[in-house]
Amino acid sequence: MKTLSFIKMHGLGNDFIVIDDLSAQKNTPLTPELAKTLCDRRFGIGADQILWLKPAKGVTARAPTDARMEIFNSDGSVAEMCGNGIRAVALYLKENAPKSHSSEYKIETLGGLIRVEVCENGNVRVNMGVPHLGAGFSGSEPESITAFGQKFQFYEVNIGNPHAIIFVQDVASFPAKRFGPEIEMNKRFPERTNVEFVEILKSEKSQAAQVRVWERGAGLTLACGTGACAAAIAVCWVQKKYEEILIHLPGGTLKMNWEGAGKPIMMEGPATEVFRGEYTVTTNNK
Image (cartoon, rainbow, N blue to C red; front, side):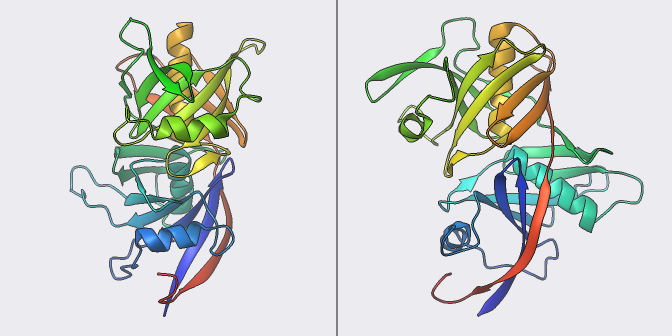
């Protein structure tokens, strides 16, 4: 048996098990099977994803990085990047591995190197990098996809991981739980995809949208940082307004800034530590 120390955190209700393996001596035996067990809300700790912190691989004198974040989804699959998760990791590093003169961190992910800053108000501001714009951004009509006999147009964005953004009239009543997994698994997306159902809100003074996310490997989540970024990019594109935009998710609101194609998207929002604990890994649950 082995005791696994963990930290439970969330970003707008998108919840995580954070495992601190920054000391190379820890060498936690984390596997996809164990990840599924840990994320189970009845038989484990319960979470949407596991954030596994390791020593950075790309540390050099010229470009030091502070940590490496690897991600397991609740189904045991691997994710390249998590926007809410990286805010949680930045907050954890700030409180447990503080720098003497800076609140900025560079974190390696499978989706690339991400720069984050813990703000004075407690929020975390993230440079999510320059998005790769796919279907729907070439000036022609968006690509279409069919699910259960219904055709949807979608905008394709990769922000370290893949997203398909679909605009709907009333996102609150839209059956995202029915269509989400069908679109995620469509053969059009060989690596599967996250799916964002987006309603543009024209009643608010500032640019805003209401979003529900079917997260690849996790299902419906209260929030998804990369999904919110992808939604913001698509809204700015179709509205031709490259300015601050508020993305309202079931778990809360994220503030985005995007200046258009070829420019990075900036995300700002909160993260919270919930509790810390230990989990006993046995032969039955590894």
